[in-house]
Image (cartoon, rainbow, N blue to C red; front, side, top):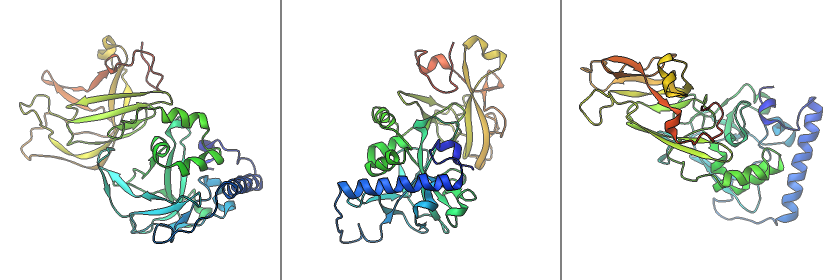
Length: 334
């Protein structure tokens, strides 16, 4: 199944075995809540119509009796895990992964389930809450994750945000063995000032980049550390006399790579930027722009104009200030 590997769950083996284990988890969670919390009645809209989340494991949705949720046309949904403490999950997005979020409503046909996402190639710290759009629990694998502002970029709440703001979700993650207390304690100690950064958990992880931005903030996040870097004038025509000349608009998907180009060997391990896709059309700001800064091309390295020629943009790892002891997946230094 699509999600069996990422969750590394105890819900493996036959369907019957998975169902028994999932049912046991739900029963244990319900028993813990009922024994430690009295049921409280809520008046007004805060309690009325709240959606009860029984599980965040895709493989346990059916056996737990989790009800499907329709958030079409809503800015979010009040949810309950612990009956005593409802909370609101807001559908927001940011223009550049920053803290400047914008409230919007979910698109039509946004029916499905909240779940905890773990990619098999990502570390545990990269876990996220997402919303899977599907017709019913049996078609979970055939569904798709609810998009944020940009098509193909899922709406999500990262684990480092969950730790800081949603204690109710943390309880369910622990109960369902999707996270352990040691991981949550480590995440709590991470630098909180990464809201305005593009957060990466591995070097090969794609980034969404806006071409009209003169600088980008990137946070390389591990379970123990955060390395924040500021890249200035990435999409600026370096040969321009204007201090703020970003010649293109548009949105691209890209990723860092370690360069294998001979001209970068003298710098030691060096990062380059690979263009993966065009998410929103790339257009010149001025129709008279001469194309000195090449328009991004999917599959190619991002180019700058230097010394009269087009050359791949690059950033030596030693300039990141890692101290050569930052254990980040894919980021190696001599």
